[in-house]
Image 1 (cartoon, helix red, strand yellow):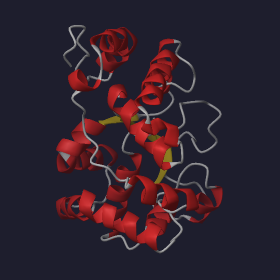
Image 2 (cartoon, one colour):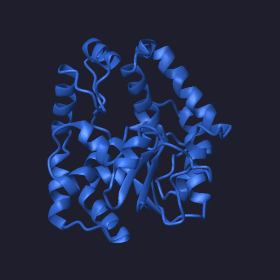
Image 3 (cartoon, one colour):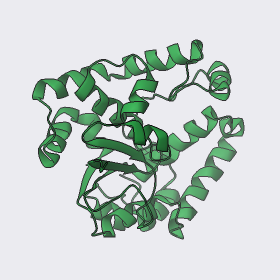
Image 4 (tube, helix red, strand yellow):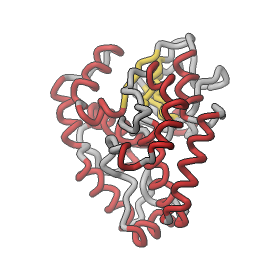
Length: 264
């Protein structure tokens, strides 16, 4: 059976999980577990969940750059690029890796080294970099592409979801969207994460390692998100280099550019 697929790709730590919950709640109302969200809106590497899912359209979560070898993309697929500012992603990745057990990232030396590696990876445009991921989706002409900027999703979620509904003619009402935004507040998602970690409930949040690091670090997978004050988080030299590396792609994505004077 041909599925009506909406393939949502984002570089890691760009808000994909929050969008996953928002879309679930738009169609289903309140969530009871992260597992039901996972089943409704599965990741691209969970073939059994995709095969069993009969929802129309079927949203699929991915962190993959565009490639003609992505088997899930047939001629009828539609795609979304969820994109976040790379300087914000760098710090979010540090938190993510700490939660996964990289406790040396508690130290400023290793944090700075991580951020420099992130910068250099994008400078060389490696196929795992933010620049490469973004460019791969912008350059492809095979599928219609809808771009959602994470900052916009954070600051104006209702208009962004309403626009997505209109672009892809989704059967959602204004009330469905408003309710979903309320149901997916940070407080409610943090409460679900805590419950699943405390009770060892399989899904998007629990693992033995995450249980340990949450106890040690008092940190969460679900965070406030949003945009950092780049001027206070980075040296002027780092920002100058970042401007050279990221500004061409930021311009294509209609983000505010990084200023070489040290201001965002």
